[in-house]
Image 1 (cartoon, rainbow, N blue to C red):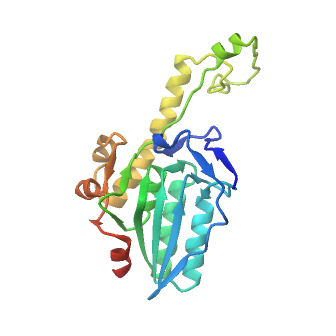
Image 2: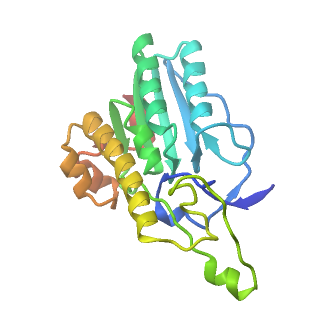
Image 3: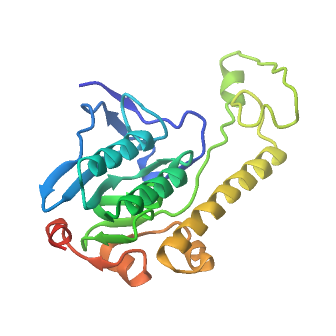
Length: 246
């Protein structure tokens, strides 16, 4: 089984910070939805999330395809069983909206279940469902966006390297590790992160019927299932078997 360190490919992330540095093992081809009877199909979501197909991680495109496959198979209820620290911002809100719309169009009930950890972009995905449930020990939250601006110029100098970038536009070289990080670079990065986070907050607010200010006030904190229920981030504290019995 192959493994590699999880990297962001230079894109903004909605990812639990504790996931940085983790090793991601190449999974087998994601399974189709699981028909557990009575018209209920379970769609498992596991690990860091990419936008498009990735050989090492699950992706929004693949998750949407599995949900559509379940609906084509006649699912009357779809349960997203999520155990993920999050992933790319790109695609997360569109996928959540599209999955919800597809289920509504078929008259299928859509439920998200915190099958371990559902944080950051994974929680955004869960908020596509009108109902979210978690066990008492489930991990929920990290509602926010994170990016990194790396300045490797001191390292370059230490090993005798000097880079001269030729770019068009004051912001074109922002984030390149071989140029010094300026205040303007950080201001631009913060504005980008804040703009993406605002969309994330609004998405959670609309789904969970809590104010944008209340979502922002969480400061991207992580809570357990009991706390998440008290904050309105989930609908009840249940096991997966209890959710399936609904």
